[in-house]
Amino acid sequence: MLMVASGGAWLAFDQDKVSELAEIDIADGRMLYSENCAACHGADLSGQPDWRTPGVDGRLPAPPHDDSGHTWHHGDGILFRYTKLGGKALMAEKGVDFDSGMPGFGDRLSDQQIRNILAYIRSTWPERIRQVQAGRSKSEMENGED
Image (cartoon, rainbow, N blue to C red; front, side):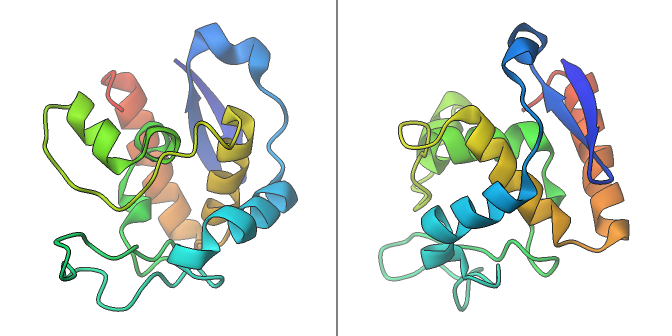
């Protein structure tokens, strides 16, 4: 894994894919978030109401991506793979049966576009939270987790 600083946070990338890295584009991430994420997670990143309580279908509503949610509690690797694969597929890889409402976007968005979206989300957090999340990303990378 390679760690790259971006917007006050450390991003973890697979070294085999470093040549694919382009500059993080927060403006592109904002636009892509609006087009692909805002319908569920809110244009203002506020998530859906009662996001901690399962709905009638048993699924948890979309959480906020602002500092009131738990997105920042996860390292970059997990956030990237959750977005690319979708919640159910990622959790299945980890041996957990979890009926997540989060679809995978790997068939619609490039890896770089996903990185841009995540960078945009991070850019909205207060500095203290960005630092905490960067520490989690670094720890995740050092421990070979994602």
